[in-house]
Image (cartoon, rainbow, N blue to C red):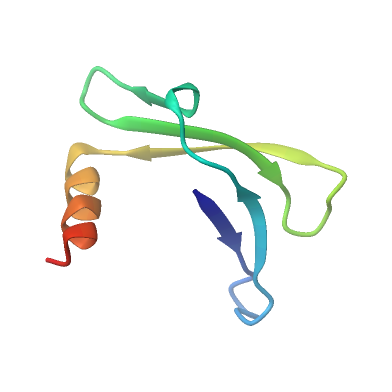
Length: 72
């Protein structure tokens, strides 16, 4: 998974803050069917800091990703 960030007002200055494969240690399923994806990455402005990021995707959001991947 590649994580790219950019300031909203300057989308041309994009930066890769993480690039590593997803694995079972970075994902967890919640009781409501949502999936939590947690990873550690640099900040947008400072390489000296590391942040923990968590994305929470509902079943509907996961289905939308699958549809997008299938080209629907």
